[in-house]
Amino acid sequence: MPRWANGNSVNVVLLGGVAFVAALQLHLLPLSGQMPAMTIVLLAALTAPLHYGLMHETMHGHLFGHEPTDRAIGRALGIVLGLPWETMRFGHLAHHSMNRHTFDRPEVLEPDRARLPATGVYYFKLIVGHAVSYALMPLPALFPVSTTGRVLGLMGSGPGVDQLRNRALVTFTNPKRRNAIRFDIAAIFALFGFAFWAWGASWPVFAGCVVARWSVLSLLDNAPHYGMPLESGLDARNTSLPAVARLLVMNGNYHGTHHRNPQLRWHELPRAFEHSGALPEGNWLAAVARQFRGLVILESP
Image (cartoon, rainbow, N blue to C red):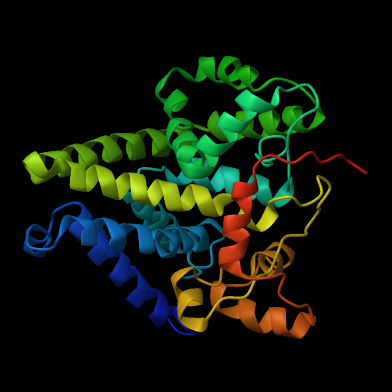
């Protein structure tokens, strides 16, 4: 049974807030036609970490502790973001088990890469590209399953790459998961198509909401790991943030504590961090801004 007690009422309230903003973004509420466009876009941007935070809890099965419920809610949240849940979950769990793998360290300048083009790619990923990649990643599921191996072959080769590719092959050739991804892609196209139609001549408002959300999520994607050693293991940065702001990011500033205790729910992270005796490694906003320093050269020990 779902654990509706033990703090889950807060999750219900947060889901309600996210649903309200999503309804404004999709022009499902009359109020959206009366609010300034910039207000709606800013609301979409400010609530993007909360939206993803709820989705993140479903990836770990922590939102309500009931797998079918969490999966259904997670998929709905992903559809509204335009990012299918199954591929987001695969990427996130790979991030946990293979921290700083080849595709999980965007700021690292490899010895054989030219700095100028690599810098352009890095800043594109930082500003919006991380989310774009998660939006594109599910599309091969629309093709026959026999093509999956060839698509994954484009990842290249290497010990870490081979391990990740093998996991992806198992995951994305699973009929149940492929069907779920296909359904979610169809739902995203239908929902986004409706939103563009509903906004009519004001369609840039909806487009601005999508870009704003994707940009915020891209900025936050690697912030707790930027510049950390390639062999970080379970390490990630914990940073300080005022209590109200921590609610909006669902305690995402305790990313290091989450990595070491992925079984904990989001509201349990502050106490676990306090009990660990560790100190914050700077401010959360500073950690996000630090990424604009650009590429770094890191070597394995």
